[in-house]
Length: 149
View (cartoon, one colour):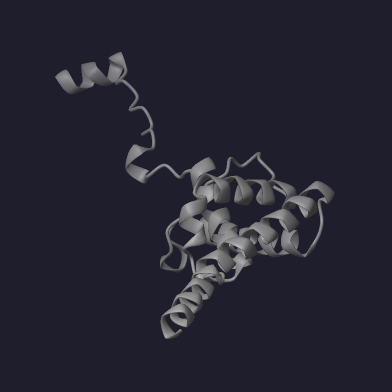
């Protein structure tokens, strides 16, 4: 009888949702809500992500401002809105879903992590060393003659 009760208890515990399962379920719900709000172009999740993106943009506007490195570098002529931020966060979340499910945080905070990673992927910053250096002008014939004298 005790063995049967122990096996039944073990089986019940194994069937109960584990914290990781709850996290994945909550994340999926949050992604679903974000997708709906992205279609409408408004909502609490869109506002939250837009606020996070604004903070990332402020940090990224100064190459060495406040000791932070640039998170992403969008082209100057590219305007991003709440829908675009939502799409970037959703796409990044789906790309690395197994990784994000492991993050023990609130779903919106996980989606803001997906947003900043997605922005960095779509709009990478070129390191200063890789930036093209201005061409050095060739010396003029008159300058070359002056050096020879």
